[in-house]
Length: 536
Picture (cartoon, rainbow, N blue to C red):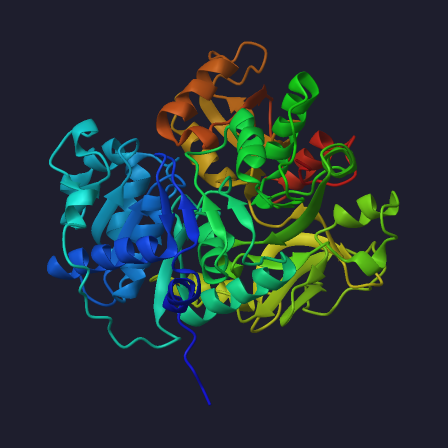
């Protein structure tokens, strides 16, 4: 018997089996059961249909990790509309592009971020604008709670597991974000996979430190819900608040990029807070490989169990884990060297490292190739970008998504990233396009040429650094200061994309045909490191 895999099944199951159990601890102080969460999602679905939102329409959600995000996401998907979460760190121009590109019909925006949408609302095709606090927002915005003033009666359309149900925008190697299309089937199977590999169960209490907009919170909006576990919402990363909440709510599981782990370690060293409540704590990390010292502190001093995972927006995101306990002995120090690797492929996921001809490299832990992957959690393709989709799946080898990361693979099949093929910098878990930064710096009249690469950072793993050839040709007296160029990028781009370091040079290394050799710049910049990617 074939039963379609639909994301609506997750909340349906939680309501059926855990209706009276606490589902959500809200940032506003309320606590909702699964029956109440489901009722609020139903009312949002009804409100959308009352306003002519139909199956296939795109509904954007711009929100930190609050209960409103969960309600809007499920409310959207229940009526067959496509959930389109937005990164709240982007600029109004970024939102303008996404809303236009996706043809978004309705936007829910948290009061803290609605002004970014208000700034461009007359330039986008969107007709419906709703927020959780209209009094705090300029402009004519509907009230989220007023939208829920209905009986929750909506018509759930017939849906197929191959229907696109979410579009997640990711920074690419060019300035324009790409819309990653994900189907019911892909989202469902990815949620099953993280339920297994992250060992999620119905008595877990999950703390939302990972942004929900990041590939639907790495699938946790589905898995945590479907298993009947508890969501503890936040309004972003607050180090003191993380420790306090873990103890107060008996948190058993959360996610944190290596940079967040380092912030927690710094706070712990200064304040020595309680690190657990009544429950053991598991923490998942990704974005860059955590140093062994970070893993050691988290496990030996905090008493948490760390799971290092890896992936990309296009792949669900998660495709590998270093939680391979048969490859290290219990609590021995051997585990740190294993856990900092990106690791083994998830169940049902084929992860390979191939050379330029598409052949598997030797499993010697030394030979470098590109990571490619096949799996049921991989995206359907890029929204309205068929050429980019074709390239992503067929560059070195046909039918595999190409990660753009260069890695080695050892005798056990564990991968370890060494460098990146793509012009992407991953700083604090966020993707930054070096090309976008270069294009921005080129706009400054004092810049003649520029190359941006990742530079090692103890705090962020890696951070953008620009090598600038000044227009006057004199790197000693370039006619502009590094601080001025940093400020210039901050004015043009989202804050997390700002270039952090500037070095003025006479010329950039190039090939005979004039192509900039960024590899040489990275090699020099990372000379004291064991690889050319950041370790948080």
